[in-house]
Amino acid sequence: MNIVIREARPEDIPQIQIVRNSVKENMLSDPGLVTDKDCEEFLFQRGKGWVGEAEGQIVGFSIADLKENNIWALFIHPDFEKQGIGRKLHDIMLDWYFEQKKDDVWLGTSPGTRAESFYRKSGWKETGTHGKGEVKFEMTYEHWKNKKL
Image (cartoon, rainbow, N blue to C red):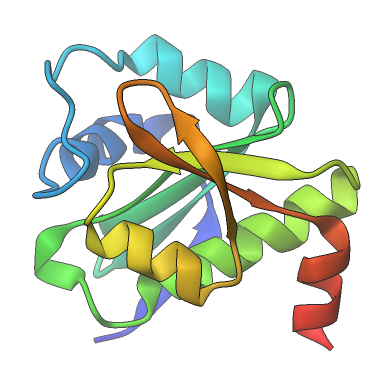
């Protein structure tokens, strides 16, 4: 199956919401917690996002927030996990983020999840906790740049 990684567009938001609400880990306590308006704000005002698309269907997405120096989202539909889509979305997002600014970027994820393992393997450094017991990770420009060499 051919997966295309491209910049997110406004018309992608309904499918982005489907992916976000389909995940088995790091689930929202209330599916209505993240609105279409929230997605639009983070995608086009605060930062930028990308989607992984297979045969016209969005199967994953990532969003970087320049305002808070944060990775706001990186999610893959469960039917498309373990195919390298998350890695591609992660890398294009961090490349773009560090082209915009050199500030450290952070994210939070639930402990004991595959996401936590993914971020550790990707070179993120644990820096404490965030929110309701999430593991907080940071990535520095220097570490990312050296990792890409």
